[in-house]
Length: 311
Image 1 (cartoon, rainbow, N blue to C red):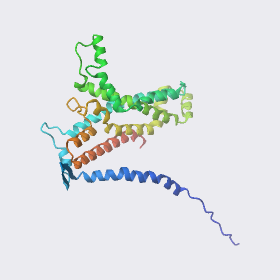
Image 2: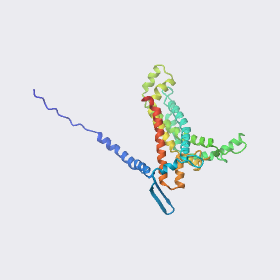
Image 3: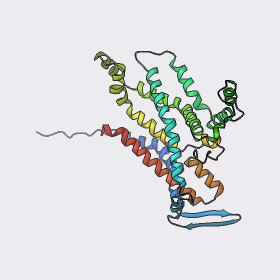
């Protein structure tokens, strides 16, 4: 019996269109992000600055810029490590209440039991502080807590203090204001992200847990949190990256000095101040590379610690 030839139908492949649509992103990323990053790493091995009208360099110095960064000063302090510690402390102090409050608000507004009305209104109100420029927010706090500001006036009128308090001379108050501002600026954005993550969870999961007799706490830890973990990890890591790049709030609040005694000086403030006092672009590149490495290490630690239960 003679077999009939099988005709192969020519299918349409849409894969190439996917590559075409995502190509602009990768091209833009390569030109404006990847290439500058590689150039920064390359320049970090050179000495390159201008002294008056004289151009010095670029001269290859190898790892000399990195050695200088980790050389203790006359007081035995390694500045870049001190500023890295300041940055992490300021981020943690603002991020912990930010994530906690945002998670509670997200659960509250998306509760299938409470069925809160007017969610759009509350989303708008919560997100509004994120629309304020951080520099303007810092100026507001500087005015409120200045020696002649309303906070000192109110405390004096209420008899709580006898003399004017200088809030900007105390480490705890300056750091506290920076942490509070970072919390107020970003908790709304985090809340909306987490709300979107919770609303993406199949409601049948909550109904099944309720039928099985689970209470609200059990539903949160057994259903909501495990299914929300991917978006929560994304939120924490992006908050970490933004926190390590903290600049405008402490810069404006302390007038770039990181007062008192540089305890509120962040890594990006250190980079900015270095560029103002010394024009060595190679050293500035080394500082940027160190910031990049610190960001990558901390992001990896956070990612591994939050996702190890899935491995």
